[in-house]
Image (cartoon, rainbow, N blue to C red; front, side, top):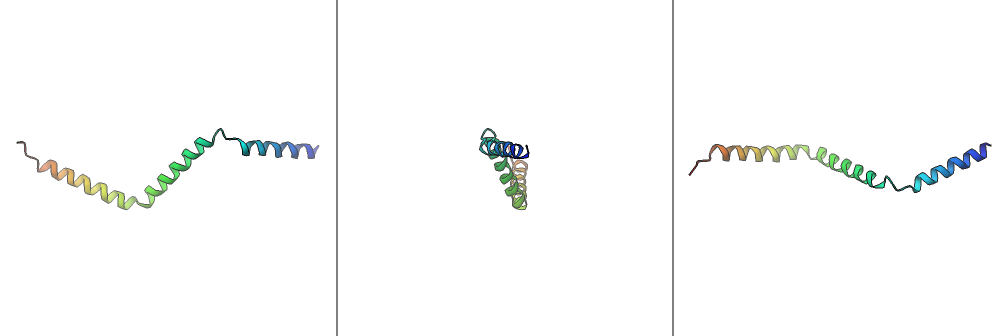
Length: 67
């Protein structure tokens, strides 16, 4: 009986391994993980670039004169 149960578990594992219905979702999750990891690695550079641009836009708005 134990042998049949082991074979059944083995077949279920093989079917699970070959199953591709969730493959697309897994790829999206991995892509999100990579993007988040890159954002975390470069967070200081991203903050500096965004801060510089917002400061530039703020200065441009302040110095704007209607013609």
